[in-house]
Length: 125
Image: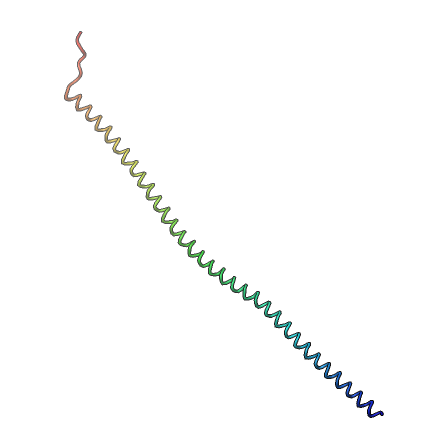
């Protein structure tokens, strides 16, 4: 009877150990699955952040190139406007010079007319 009780006790103890070992393995498997799921979830976020960062870097480079081109084009426009303004000033200077020459020529023509005709004599009454 004692040996049977001992045998039953040992059997129950072995069953408990097996059950405990099975539960331990299940717990390890569940923890591993949970850890993998958490890591996968984090990796998706990290991967998305990496993709977004690459897109932003590309957009920044594109924007820098476009800003540089715009700056160069703006400098060209400013140069053209300055040249146009200078040309307008020169036209204005030529116009003033032409008026001055015209006035001088009228003065000379009037003087030549006066010399050619002689002094105007007052009308006799």
